[in-house]
Length: 309
Length: 157
View 1: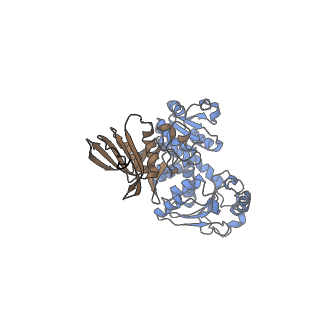
View 2 (view 1 turned 45 degrees about the horizontal axis):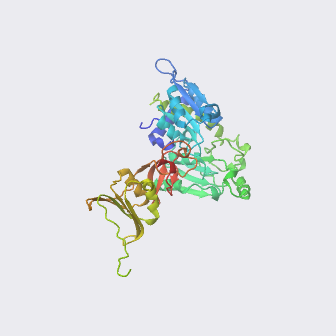
View 3 (view 1 turned 90 degrees about the horizontal axis):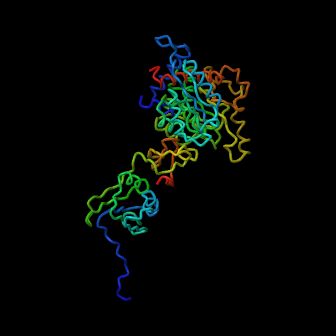
């Protein structure tokens, strides 16, 4: 592999994405894998989780994955208690911590911070979110959830709903799915449409997509409905937000007539865009999706550290 | 002062570089990125809004005894893709070069994304030069965002 870090989903080829899917499935079947010498796969390794910006859930998911692999965790969940608050540069923080560990998992508010850290660090870096830019482990757990529920990645119909303009998760997921002959449906208010650069990518790869402004009544042929949150601060006009917000709330009665195998995903946290009466519906998958995050992250960590080829 | 020739002859240079076919709107950017505004050593003649058969109007820069390196030429190409760089020795053009838009640009363009790490940390910028709907734009190697109107980063040159 040319780059042993994972900063952007585009760092992984289609083959590497598929390999991560296989490894994640292996870990789900058998979480407590051991080396031939009887030790756990990453016993003796130290992995640093550097959360310059707090994100409890993502950090705990990574730390759960690290612990299950038998490695030890060092790090911080809030940069205010570190030398960063004294004005230390990212370069120096990473240069120091790279001496203490075998891998760095980091989240930062600045876009591009993880790519830069990967140039400075002497160990693999996993980007756990750099501002609004990339969060590739989220994309891989989304893909794993899709693969697991549909049995394949090729030739699926995927609907993306909500803020398609600013939502980094839908952009990265689109980039990853563009390897797999996906047919997309984009559902959003006019202000929050999928940006032209992503539609151009689909055109270049010969993939079909349609753009809609209505959710209700349009899910019949979809295999996956990927919901995202619409943020009030994205609207210049608060009246406009009030007008559109209810149009993108998924309610149980809207699920009549959808495919039996259709699953609803959401990167969470949700704030009202999926009504709670959907939670017990067999199409709801967003809480299982979270669990898949641990398997996907175990796969990513082992792959980058060469513990699994 | 009848009979006196009122035109001023722009001196030929004996040795140095002539950058020709610069769009007048790009002239000051080029002066800026080549650091010519801080060059107190080499003799220079700079002309702009000159007539040009090929371009309508053009700007030209003549610098004595200075020969820009390839990476400086690359920078010119971003703003003046049609520019010609002529090397002069002993009053004669010994080399005529067209500029080429480089595949990568490092260190002098500022990323347009205010949340990019390069705008907050002492990190040299780096871009891939990409074509987007026929327009040459820069994609930041760090934040992956597109920069269209390349302003130069003031503290790096």
